Image 1: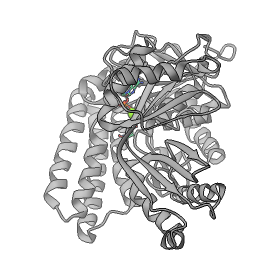
Image 2: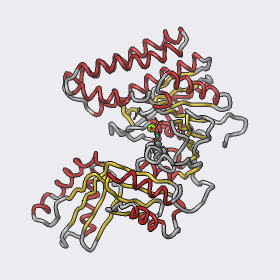
Image 3: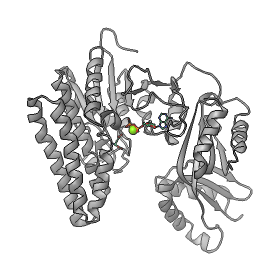
Image 4: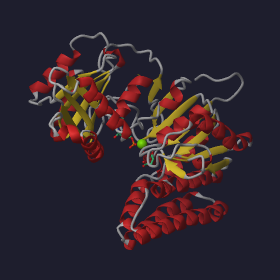
Length: 472
Ligand code: ADP
Ligand code: ASP
Ligand code: MG
């Protein structure tokens, strides 16, 4: 580990929902932080207890339909789960300090839900305040657990540290301001020698309105804080031994990858590997801060190190990932509408809707553009492109938007695939042998990944086939 002379290394440790899912897990996390705080300066970033964010979002949605009973039940469940941790892991003095703060958060929950029921609506802005309450409760608890163990620790709300734009539900940090505010906001706690416990997932606009960084965004919070503090390392603690050669739920034979590059990690997370939020690497990439993925259930396992340039340069495929809920859209124009013009207007439409494509292929001769998007974006894309090409469609200069639903994109990733001939052919044959039809294929000139579109129903088999072919 790199560290400045005579100083303890600074490690930002992010704990995911499964790592803090119940009293026993919280206790283990307290012990892990305590142990590492002996050799390093630790800053903690924590997610909500597992399942809590889902529960909060569901409660808000049910409330907006006028159902009071649902959120009242959810309030009880939230109180029960957080109280159980406080009852079992906190000293009486800490309980006395923390229970009123948890009650305050539950009152906020109740007031917000009650408002949603009255107006029969939940806006993205209000949803962010509500859906990230779980992180406020878990950070409050974890700091109190550490204090109950004799470690100085203070919970701090990331709305005080991370400054974002106002894209509620998927906000982006404004890095210059975030870096300065995070430094400043944590300096008093760090100077006292206390461990800051930062809420993951949330930030705030310049005006102080709470935002969230997107589902699974606490990973991103971890590297935002790590980047701002110029930490020596960021450790992301989760429930698997590291980044694996495939999603272990799809391929039980998947194995841990000891080291991967930033680019490979970005590609993996963009194409659905849930182990990392897609934006996680961005804040640490330029500063070359290594990110470790570690298992809080198996802490002696070293995990995966994500770095700028891994030492292992073995050529070939390193991992397979997939996105299951996609649609393939085809747009075709007549000769009078040049392909570049068609493509420019389609992609501009996607840009205006903030939609990214999972893969895109073209056939300039036929003026056909084909691209895949997440199913969740389909309605917006249809509406936007329908409007953009309204006249052209009316006069049949552009064909109707054709949608092939229930598509999966299977992606083989490896920075060292570049210059290795025959990889696409092997993947093709492996899929062919299992009778899996390939609907579209795309490979970037960077040769970092090859993507195959297959039917959703074939995704598990396709991932397994390619995994087996490359003996991952
Ligand atoms: P956390 O609660 O710690 O944020 P997540 O559930 O968000 O954890 O992410 C961890 C999960 O990601 C694992 O349990 C695993 O099922 C899934 N996953 C998907 N693809 C991969 C992969 N390539 N390597 C490791 N885990 C993966
Ligand atoms: N709790 C948030 C979620 O479930 C953020 C996270 O866990 O990373 O999406
Ligand atoms: Mg996660």
